[in-house]
Length: 252
Length: 316
Image (tube, rainbow over all chains, first blue to last red):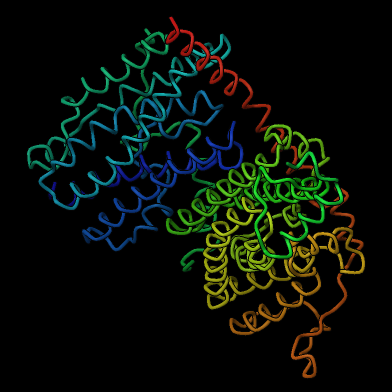
């Protein structure tokens, strides 16, 4: 594949991860368990939407096709979204939301650390900015995992349940295909097999402090990077794309 | 020293301080009614910020562009922040945050009635910023000079952010008004629905306002409801004209003599109904807030339990 096209695809994957998780988190706005958490979750959603914007703008500027950043974000079909299945999972409750966030943040921190060394300067700059935000996100979600795991019997049971359910979407985080290989060789992309150890270490450390058991199930779901999503995705997009679909081709 | 003085003397000195524009601080002596009035007003204000997150939060997931989504998120986050420091200002008067919130949930405490109207289109995000935050600024700018120090200082920051909100709202509406026929219609429809409720935000007419006279004497309030309402109309009408939208009031007319706009009679029946809990969204708004508190109970309990355990560990 032409390198520019591979990079375009890579940017969509990263942008979609941020966008879809940001969309999910923003559903919480006004409904958080305490005011401080309402502010924190909105803040994280804001960071993620900002990351998505930077990544889509860069993708759009490559000139692979004529789509703007907003068109990339809002008017693709479901099968053309490339996000991990993990980030599209429903909020369910504060425990699921935090577990999803933690499993993702624990990946994103070493990922952005590595990506900030990319030979592609624009991508390295986006990664560096995103890394600052992600460090804070990971600290926030790690602290909550510990609070919920260690807190009461109820919170312990709820967070363990959330981790058990979401575990099925963790293997996919480290899947790599030809696009990754091609861009790794060019020094542009991150070799996920290298950062996996860092993710595992963070997850184990926090689980251990929180008293959360590492799920034993090896049953795993994959397909997000190829556009094969879970049933939740269609509803998320129906809401997110509503304006663009109902009033096509307009400026807002 | 204060024990030696009679109530009359204390009240006299208190009023002298107010008249001399000296700020009242949390540990200063103050009449009970002054304290009560402020707790009522500040907590109402805090509740309005928190309930006000809901109608706008309703559109974050459907915002039409990345930029609009980010700006709306930031705006609603600001409102949560305003809620936080207003609850803190109320706490300086001895009001407990959780008890204050329970009063909101039980219906005992009020919040701005405007948030009991539904947000039905994207244009409402613009109109709320333009009109609702615009009206809020008119009410709040004088509060930066309020006699109670912590409230006045909180309001300085709130007003700065509100003025940014007002501008971004007007920008959304302007963009729609200059857009396609569908967008322009969306903007006009939104203005039609929000105009009158926005005028009601200034409260009852001066003749019917229970609290105005005493609050003005105490310099909690600096202008009457009708004065502020008139100011709002005079500023907003030319803005609507500028972007080609029509104010939905057949009686609206420039009065050369008063150098001000005359406008039609507000539907006070509707105003009273919404205050009594019969607006389109009163029940939904309170239910959402109650659910947030109820669904978050296990989270708050977990955080407390964890903090306790940690303290115990440290002690050992």
